[in-house]
Length: 68
Image (cartoon, rainbow, N blue to C red; front, top):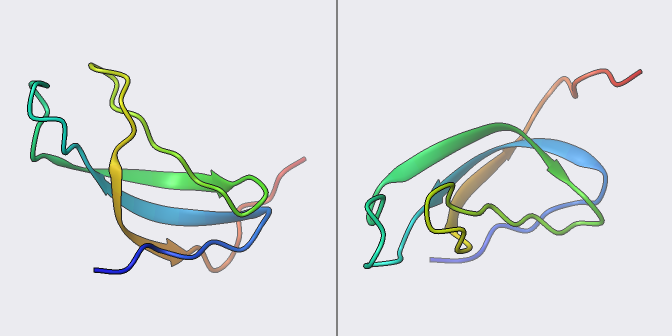
């Protein structure tokens, strides 16, 4: 499986999985929408164990959310 590639300063619909076997969320997938790509870098952390999650997929939002 390849890692999603993000363009900087855009919004995505991301799916992430917790692969930390010691966490109660282990193996679960979570939707993060919207998710901002700050400088082309996206990091999603588990809310319980605070460890980075594995990014499974990312879809560019079209249209992009309006920010004021």
